[in-house]
Figure (spheres, rainbow, N blue to C red):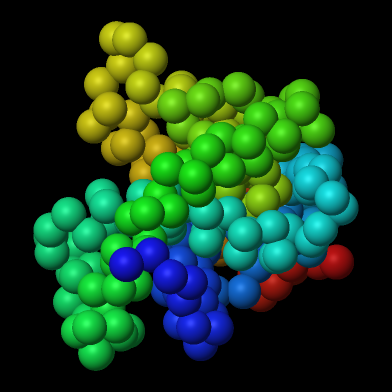
Length: 225
């Protein structure tokens, strides 16, 4: 039962894959770019957060995101569909209501899973070669791939993949520290939409604090431009 899928089902699978990827079904954007732009708007231009990496075949980040989402969906399908802990089985039934069609699609995906896992590994090796500044963390290949797609700095990707899991580091304490630093930045009215390395977060906080202290107010408490 391994015949090719109807085109409409292929399109539907691409939509499902994107929905269950790091992109959560949305159009490409970058939290790093957004944060850098927020800082730029208040006159902080010396902190580089967004990195535009080379994408294979010079495709856009948006198109590459869709490709990696589809590869990852096929490669990780059995894990996604193992039980209904995250509600995926229920969602999949809603995506493809007809049971006969759904079982055929599941059979087809499973038959392709290994080849898509290999394709994902090839894409990982390719993007590392194109961007040697990226950390090479093979057991976190999806995190590295999406980190590059969303333009996160190498040090942020390194921290997300390895830094918080170093020997001797308590992961719960690391997560609490990340939240604490993120909340401090938000206290200045700045949105933070991703995990920053502690060193980066501290640098941003330091610059924001210096800027706050240098602002001159008039007698009514308004900033003097």
